[in-house]
Image 1 (cartoon, rainbow, N blue to C red):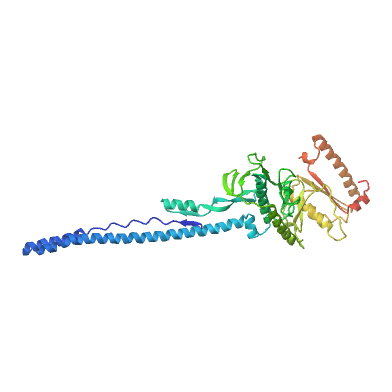
Image 2: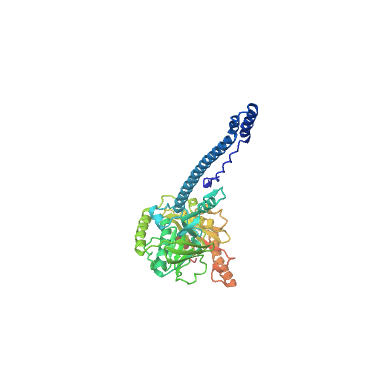
Length: 459
């Protein structure tokens, strides 16, 4: 049995019925009769009366012993049940503490600030939508009476537990506007207390409408996970919205919370419906908590002295997103499609421009296969800057200034490649590469762009 299994005491066995000493009772009767026949004395018959007296005495002595045995067994059973009840209370308390530490709501996060590890948000991240009855990991075995069945039912049930749903499924709160806004503030503030601005960004019209614009997470378009508040706004990874009571939730939303008042709510998920108590925050409470979160975010904002490329996560997003650096707000994510399509790296000699370009190309190559992106590397600073990248299958050409004729042919071939791509897009009726999946993106990386223009002014 594991540490969360309680073995229930069995019912005390009924004590055996006392046996009657019939043989011992018959012997005095026979002996008394024999003496009477031999002696003829009536007093000998008194000896025969000892048999029935012994029989009656033994019977009542057995009843008394049986009563003592029954009482002792009942006391032992009661003590065993008390131990089982105490063990159940202890295990439920430990489990209650553990689940709230693992999945804290705002009250729990304020009472014990959660640790912010390196685990990022994703669509499976759990968000606490309220308190209710959940299934406990405690189990009870043994016993088949009513008391045992009732105990097993209580053991399998954890009251006042966090009710969690995956954030990526979206949440719709159906209630009157003041109640719905208060519930949404609590849901968002819970996430902001658990995750920093680099991990979570808030977008949408609900940010300002529900009094959350002062949070450092607001407007963070480069956060690794974007949560849209409301139904209007940019593309996001998840959504929390509000509807009036009785209105249908938006398509794609998998969790609907119906609130009459926060203390009485019902959540509907693909797994079924559950009664729960939701958390709610006023605008003033959200403002006060937001100030504390902003102060914490400022304190935690430090640029590391050194970071290796293999210490960074790999960006798994559409486009050409890549993580190749870490700033005071976390890992730096840049998408050449959303943020580009062109980029320039400037700096004094020796400040690491070439190393940054190498890291950027390597990060893109790590996140996207050769079928999606190809690189042409142009090095007009000695010809060796891009040597570490030559082994990448994404690299289709390396042009250097060491071979003047080769450089002219390489630059000329770029113009031909551009015309070929324009023709491919025209033939497929596509406006850009996004609509032409058979055409990989081509990224031209130039070290010392000024030198390239000087040598090839017609480029």
